Structure formats: C-alpha cells, structure tokens
Length: 90
Ligand SMILES: [Zn+2]
Image (cartoon, rainbow, N blue to C red):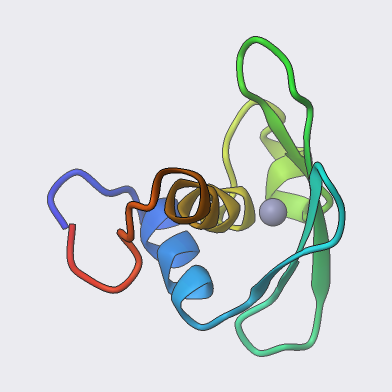
C-alpha cells in the first residue's frame, strides 16, 4: 500500500466489508466499521468531482475526503469502470 493514505486504506476496508450501499442516483450510505452509525454521502456532480459526507471528519476538514467518501469512490470505480481495487492490494 505504498501510495495509499490512511483514509483511503480505511475507505477500502469499508468497501470490502460491504458497508457501502447506494441510496439514490447521487447518494450513498456508509455504515461505520462497528455498524453503530450511518453516514450519508452525496455526489455534488460538479466539475471538481466533489463529494459531501455527514461525518465529523468531513465537516471539520471541509475540503478533504473522509474514509466514507473514499469507500464510495472505490465502489464507483468498481461499478463504473469494472476495476476492482477492493479485493487485492494496491
Ligand atoms: Zn465521512
């Protein structure tokens, strides 16, 4: 995992554990790793490809990508490009 940040690694882990479910065209729900919380992720569909999450980490660091958004991105890459980066090591 040379080029992966901690958030990406955690996001990948959430994706692998099946914590991501699509709830709408541009929205997803990601469960916390212990299953105690749910977060809503929204794809803004803007030019900068930004996503929004309801978790504390995202709200605190507005411009950053939290592990939940990272998890959604792994799922998107798999579903839209047929590239499964979830199962193997990057
Ligand atoms: Zn989040």
